[in-house]
Image (cartoon, rainbow, N blue to C red; front, side, top):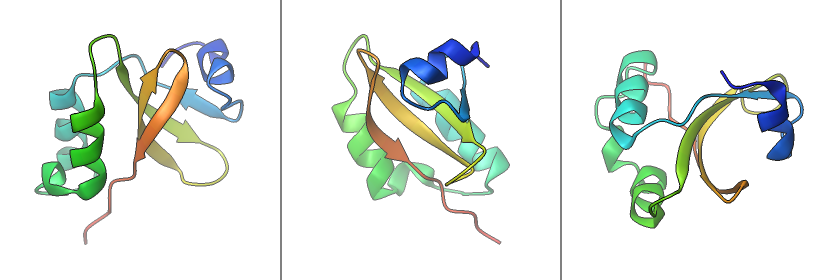
Length: 89
């Protein structure tokens, strides 16, 4: 995880933010942790992947309040989109 200053810079003072991740790393984490067999078919993910441009970052965000975690598409220190994986039982 990054230092708290990274989360604060994104306006997420009660959260922790990961180092930048590749699309493959995000999909692998979702499949492993959430037992989601096809996250790449999620509408949120499709939009996030389509809007990602060179220089953008994908980061996992974990928070104390609100959604426990999500993946964020970050551009120039602004969160553009959030991907909330669905837990499957």
